[in-house]
Image 1 (cartoon, rainbow, N blue to C red):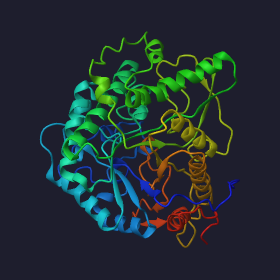
Image 2: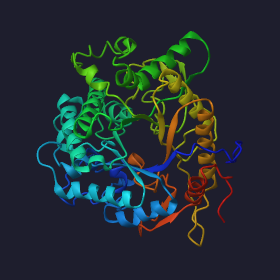
Image 3: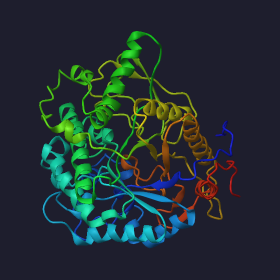
Length: 479
């Protein structure tokens, strides 16, 4: 892969450069300190759900390697680190007593980050719901949202003002639809009504958690949420193809953006899903709670989609933002006549198309809708089939080119007037890639899964150069 975009673009002096990870993907130590199973522990142990039967039992052993990993972040020059908290590590059942060992783990991580002059960005939920709550209905159960607010309050009390930015949820689209409709993510359910209930209860959880953090730490405490907003284009300008795009936009984007930022659900989603539910699970005060003031909106971006009006193949809901196609059910609840079309290349190892211009379009569109709301890219990156040279190096030229062009796209959006405050590369390290197990590598740092040794790839060295100069380096390999 080569890059058509020029190098050298500079960024604002206060632009924040970071990386991102998720607890189940990197921590390991699933039985230590009283931690109880999450839905991903259960799902990964279910035959056929995760490639090669992989689990996060060890992952990359971050739990035991925090000092080493924070030192590595400092060597890279990271200015911020976006991590997630494992709910079941700090509160095994999702209710009741909290575990001091788990609280101490995250408190120590935060202290080490601050000592290394790295801003901690804490995500309260990155998909690893305590299994005990799933046994009671999971996100389809309103009580889960209420308990999430209580968990958020405790974390605010423990971590306090040491957190640079609090993020309530990561990609609730995936939690709701991949977890409860298509079943390709934990907990692996295939029930459209449960998925829609999960949508609302995740929205409610966001509002309750954001308000709890602000109640504890003050109303000016910066709160965020991270959404994987879909960039979907109609195959033609024909009315039926535009309607297909509208359905995907509604169920993919608007059911989160509108309640969180406008205090309402789009009326179209009620019409699209009236054959499934009357949405009576939305209570009178819920929308006021959900619309908690945000300091920044986090956006995760990887690829784009193209749709037309038609009959999808059985079991094919098209690729979601994580590239999954459902083997049983579609994640696109309510989009009953939408066919996803193949996207032209180039593609990553996940099969996702590479289109930096889609990121420009997305950022400009969101900014035009919500001009007063700052944005941040909280995940962006690519999996490629890395090759290790005899001396242990990884010359991942395709990943360097991918990052070069997408970061330049962020710069282009800023040039067009979009208020983008930061960029977090996905991911800091190779890790457990959900249902793909350890078969896909996103890291700018390579992990040898046998020895757990970390090696900075050329992409990591390139990103470090970018941070040091605040300008996009040429995508030349570090030989």
